[in-house]
Image (tube, rainbow, N blue to C red; front, side, top):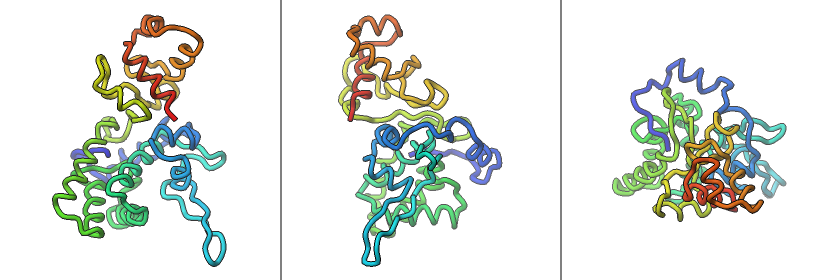
Length: 250
């Protein structure tokens, strides 16, 4: 979740930056890529952005998307869509929050509070984060201790999204596959891989190097050694292994 501090929600500057065509809103990821980077099952992610068909007594019905995708012809998602999917996945995986509850909270955020794209503009103190916790707590009759636990979960995810000077997402540090197992290993970083729309064409790179993770994997598969890569790119052995773990994760 993203933490917003002392920013007026109605600021024209923030609204303009949120909606103008910058690299964060450009179609850049296939649904399969986006699902992997955001840690969401591909079928789930497709239903969030493009809806899904399901059978009823009256015939087949298609659900409405929860989040607006960057492009539907073809189906492509943006960096901002990645963040929205990551945040929504965080909500869904906490206490198994029902999608109906998420939709209701999103509707309340937009209609009653005028919060535009609340999954990008959430906060633990104000805006969507607090709104969601209160709304969900009322629906589920959560105790104060349970709501505090929910906030703590969001705080743990806050470190995965870095904000710019306008408190909008600018960089994302994904979890994926074996990556959490490497955290805490000798020489390992807590956030070794990043996705930044202004670095490496928005593809996952090794933090501080600008080297795409798939380049690391390709060179290792071609028979080069870890030492050769550390020398060429000025990265550590732990960073090489983190890039391989991320790139090879299912």
